[in-house]
Amino acid sequence: LAKTTQPISMDSYEGQEVNITCSHNNIATNDYITWYQQFPSQGPRFIIQGYKTKVTNEVASLFIPADRKSSTLSLPRVSLSDTAVYYCLVGDNTDKLIFGTGTRLQVFP
Amino acid sequence: NAGVMQNPRHLVRRRGQEARLRCSPMKGHSHVYWYRQLPEEGLKFMVYLQKENIIDESGMPKERFSAEFPKEGPSILRIQQVVRGDSAAYFCASSPTPNTEAFFGQGTRLTVV
Image 1 (tube, each protein chain N blue to C red):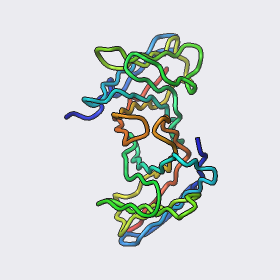
Image 2: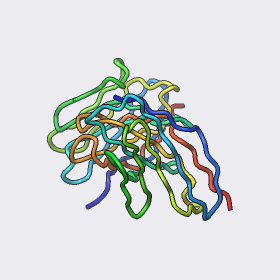
Image 3: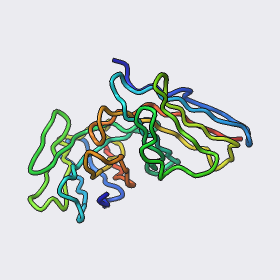
Image 4: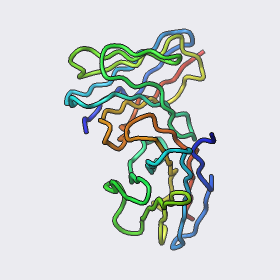
C-alpha cells in the first residue's frame, strides 16, 4: 500500500478555491487515488477517485500529473460547510481502505 | 436503498463488560470494513470482511476483539472485557467491490466507564 502525505491543516475563506495536495511517491501501477471528506461526528464520505490526468464531478476536481507521485484535490468556491477533514487514499482494487491523518480544512467567513 | 446502518449510535459499557456493535451494509454490498477513530485522530483500519470470510484483520487487536459477517444478518464487531482505552467511535463501511466507493455508517460511539 502506498503511503500518503498531506498537509495537516489549511485555512481558506468563503468563495475561494482550495487545492489540497497529496504526495504518494511509491504509488504502484494498479493503484487508484481516492479522496474522502469527513465532518465531525460523521463517517467519511467519498468525494472523487482517479487514476491519471484530470477527473471532475459536481463536487470537486482531481488533478494527477503524469508521474502520479502526487495528486491535488481542488474545491471550487468553498463555503463554510466545506469545513471538514479531507483524506487522500491510494490503493488497488484488492486493497482495504487505509486512511492517513488527513488535512483539516477550516473555511472562514 | 438505505445507507449503511450502524447500531447502536451510542453505547455505554462498564469495564469488563462486552460490547457488540452492529453494521448492516448497503443492499448488494458484500465487502465490509471496520474502523476505530479517537477524537482528533484519523480512522484506524481494524478488519475487512467479505460475506462469511475475514479477509484482513491486521488492524484488530489479537485479544478481546472479534468480527464476523454471517451469510444472513449484519456484521458484528465484538469487544469482550472492555477497558477504558476501547472508548472511541467505531465506523463501518461497505462497498460492492474492494477499493471502490465505500459508504460509511454514522458510527457507534462507545464509552467505557
